[in-house]
Image (cartoon, rainbow, N blue to C red; front, side):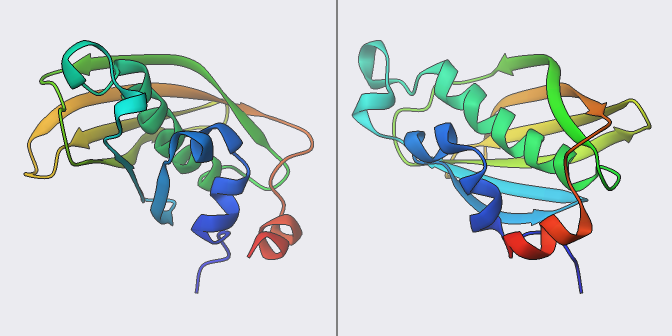
Length: 146
């Protein structure tokens, strides 16, 4: 049994993600899944889901993945993020799947794939998260968040 906080508790820690309508569907150190439904208020010209909304989805999934890989007492912050967009999203729900690429003492690198409802890759983000010593994740905090 994992001591990881429930997805709902993790999402509450990122209020901006909630404002966008991001749903955290699965959260474990090896894999985080999140979703964002197309909505007209999240679009740019021609009803295309805004790249910033897609980047926020990827950043949220990646940050949660990094958080779940932190040592006790550490916190994290994004220090680098790179996104490639491959195709536009004009409807449906985009799913993000984040996996750690490197978990080290100072940095955690995460790759997040963004896929549309048909499973087509629409974007990919690689981000680096700093591992910050000090007040952050603790076993007691994780238990309270559940």
